[in-house]
Length: 84
Image (cartoon, rainbow, N blue to C red; front, side, top):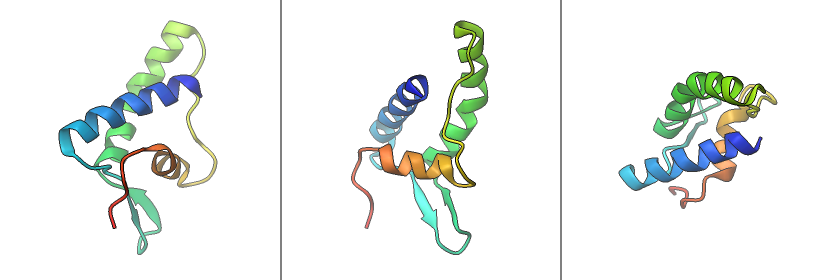
């Protein structure tokens, strides 16, 4: 998942520089991950997946373990301080 990690880090740096926050939230009521940064990553993934396969001939590996894998992965690997 090295390519995905590079994508995640680049998007996180750009998002945090522009917004000054993480943009990742857990909705306890809906039991799901969300936030502007998670939405950004989900919006970019289809294009990134196509480009990765076209350039490298291999699919882009992304977190797919369980319903909330992507949001949880982004939460665990995004460096900015969490909001209290």
